[in-house]
Image 1 (cartoon, rainbow, N blue to C red):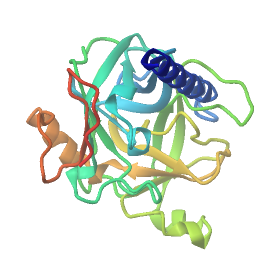
Image 2: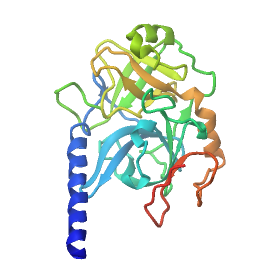
Image 3: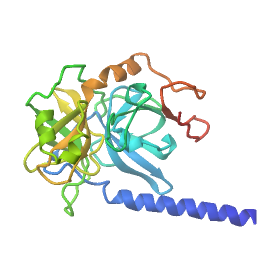
Length: 289
């Protein structure tokens, strides 16, 4: 009886993994709508890890040999053991695979990521092993506090997201040029029911004929070789639609401090913040606190 029960559990888990794999297949080979093929050595692919392999889910970017940044919605309520990070090429399947040691959210505050409004849509991933920085893999700097307050400038967004609804997809990284728009104009472009979700910590971008879409979430928004934002959400995945992103300058001090002190993951569950999903190296156990 015990043996039959174990077989049932294995089959159930395998079936669930197949469903995850099929779901991810829809979006894993795409590109920014209206973008062009591009090289960006700080790019990271955040992956779902299943029995069938690992599949692209979100974008991310390298900020040091130990840390990668992505959107919180990509990792929220997931055990780090369910995720992987790939770096090292423009392919949708970069060669260097890394496990995630732990995940930190939004300045390590009591009130962190809000999945409804997508407030504080940022996650800091600590790798289990160092990322090797070389000609194909590099780290990128971040916009400092108060250094990028909605200037009407062009920015570059990188991603593997889908190219067009129902259209063909590419397996290489793409870049799109977008224009930053003010928060006031951004809010007015949405219905009144949506405007409350556009926060002061957001950065809005748009360009006729271009859009970010599934698979681009978590990717970097770059200006003058610094990340100024993280792709977060769009009301509709259609070309020309305004993209609402996370403003990096509101979180760069938190991230740079973690890099400076080489912040470790905890070995015990603390009773005070920060809130972390933690995967010990010897076990695959999820702690949320």
